[in-house]
Image (tube, rainbow, N blue to C red):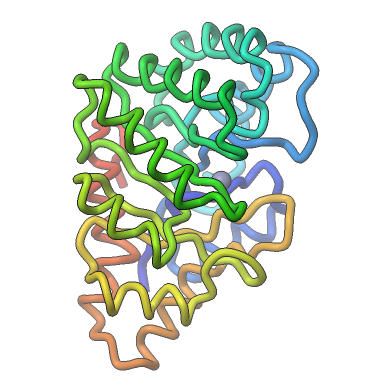
Length: 266
Ligand SMILES: [Zn+2]
């Protein structure tokens, strides 16, 4: 089995996780910028985090033969402070030419607040200005549908954004259709407790097809499983999915989307 882990917060994981992923057939891991579990006190905290994502983490992954890529942004959970977000966004352009940076993400909404929306628009503008791919986080709260609709509206309103260069992550049964119909890619997140279990994700795949869709573990500092993607592939095999169909979802699809950034080479 070969696969790409397109969404994992490896700065929160132990080195053994890299080894397990490599043994399971992982060929590349992509790390969107995320909340640390606590709010950073200044833009300097984000600067150091971006240095970690673009400098230190690729070296840690390389020890296990794994390519490491990342995305940069202010995450939705820290987007309530618009002034701080502006300071962080101003830091990002100088990192965009680093060799492992794929684009702007994971931007999006958490509580669907006015300030979050403002910061989302600022970061969509940043991506458009610098012709970057976009990775979007959708809310995990009960407002996922509303949040997804708001995000799609922001993306649609900016005429510079090409839908096929945006992946909307953490889709579920009630949002996947909206995302695909808007021309975007969709990400399904496999979590042991919340979000999609492997069985539920496969049910969704069997319903909506396997075009423009990928699977990820979104493993972070919380309860999560860095091997969720290969475990789901095994579950697909048990349910009779053919090897080529499994390879498409866990390897070819993420490769196709991510290769829109010339730096993504595996
Ligand atoms: Zn994430």
